[in-house]
Length: 64
Image 1 (cartoon, rainbow, N blue to C red):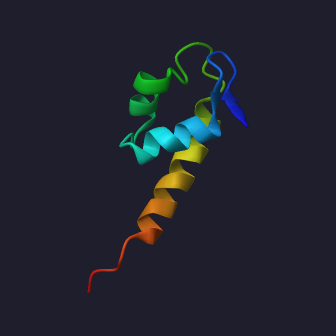
Image 2: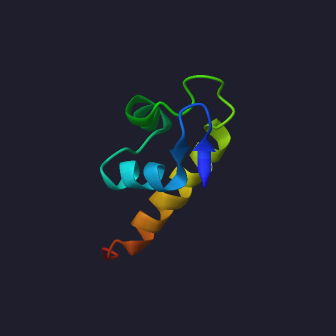
């Protein structure tokens, strides 16, 4: 699904950038340009970011 129409960025591209180390909206903006033009995609980008980071955190083994 397209998240940023201004730059043609999809949720899959955002998730891939997160897998490659982007952990903040600023990092995603630097890499993919999301939120750098009209800004309407920022909230949706944050939702994708938070969901993906939560999935990554949940997949980590628990340390006792």
